[in-house]
Amino acid sequence: MKLSNFQKKVLRKIGFYIADIAVNILLKTCKIKIHKREIINDLILRKQNFIVAFWHGYMMIGWYLHRNLNCAALVSRSKDGELLAHVLKKWGYKVIRGSSHIGGNEAMENIVELLKQKNNLVITPDGPTGPIYKMKAGAVVAAKKTQVPLILTGICSNKKINLKSWDKFEIPLPFSKINVLYSEPIYISNTLTYDETSRLIQDCENKLNNLQEDVRKLCLS
Image (tube, rainbow, N blue to C red; front, top):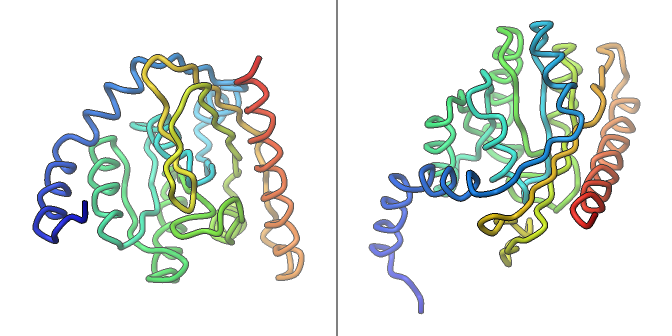
């Protein structure tokens, strides 16, 4: 059944009111195991802010895990982005609107400013439109400009639904087991050349894909 524009507006309005509540209820039923949690905890204890990056398809869990941790988030200016921005604000995020396609330069300036003010950043480096599992420059460039460590994050649910979207968006089923795996902090020199930075972006992409494969194995064990 094809929805009318009015029906879409009604559903979006309902989503504004119940999305964060629904996700909270769902994920509270799940058993979440965080591997290498001490990496984030140590940075927090040292009052060192950080950038967390995970693939777009796992953002439901990724955003939830880092709520109320003095985090900023980059969200597209699309209508779907409006709903996500609303949820993230409920979770204590400072929301920056923009993407690599629209408002990218302004968004990067805002990201750098917030990082310099000791906020953390949570970002989906293949968002908002893909291609899937291909890292765009934002996370690495922000870490390079601010000397804030980058933490790559693999996420997996043992029981889930994957939507037929470009990012294969993952929704964990109630009472599923979720594994989260952090990388070691990646510190990026601000003296890197353009070519060196491009190679590092590719290296981080490979590391995040390997991390995602490692966490999938943890889900099966």
